[in-house]
Length: 370
Image: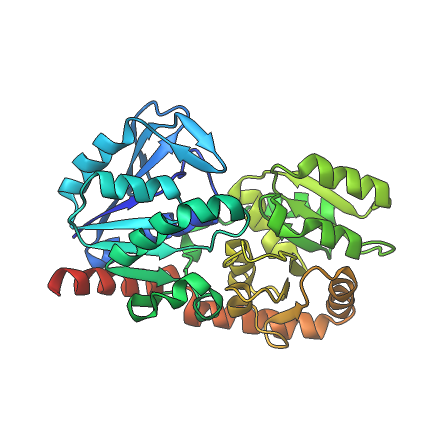
């Protein structure tokens, strides 16, 4: 079975939550007889084809970007040629240009849409895009949501309930590197024996300003891994608040990230808006047996992190509530150990890449035999 994934960004150019999901889908499908390829846009698509792990990535030139939407003049022909060879087309929503390409290509193949997130920020553009979006989703054969929480709270998905399936995102722990003892010791020396850890891109919905406000007048170390458009602003905020206990480490390689995941006391994930539809880095924390602190935003974050069981869930946008949760975990190693163990058990039961790949392969097969 041949599947073509289509999304605006992908490895090796870009690494985010959706890219990680596509990667895990491509790799986990192999054992179920699914041969996946990815078509994406790139500012520098040379070479135009690259291997990422065990799957082929096709890159078309990114010509224009407006409101986080990439456009390409050359991708339509590439899409038609690649789609002709595929059994199933797997789109990753949202990306309005993708909807246009689908209809311009006159696509007749079975279509799966993974609905990663509602469009939250571009409210005015949404009014223009809404008719095309609903026309696109109406013509999809199946829609996939990553959590029952998101399916229940998305007004858009309510309109397509009868063809929406929940398949949680999954990660393969074996695909993550095992850091050397020397690397672990290096980070232990730099960060201390106990610390809170955030991993992610510094975007508007990640709520890092809330985390920094919560850290005021505290002395426990907080490690922030990642970069992004708000990096300078957040560093200025930390300086203004006099937060000597916060370290911004920037982007790190997987070896270093895994070392910090293994060493940290707990994961802090202050995302406060629905643009955070799931939280792959939150799931990584669960995979490594760490308790979590997150906010209740009606999305997959509260499907990964169950309040009082795998961690603590607080009201969104409330620094005081976040601070109280941090105090509770910091003051109780027994609670951290118990919740971390439950988090890892929940990952193993619900969120492995093998489980996701098996469910998605079954969905593809159903489409082809309908």
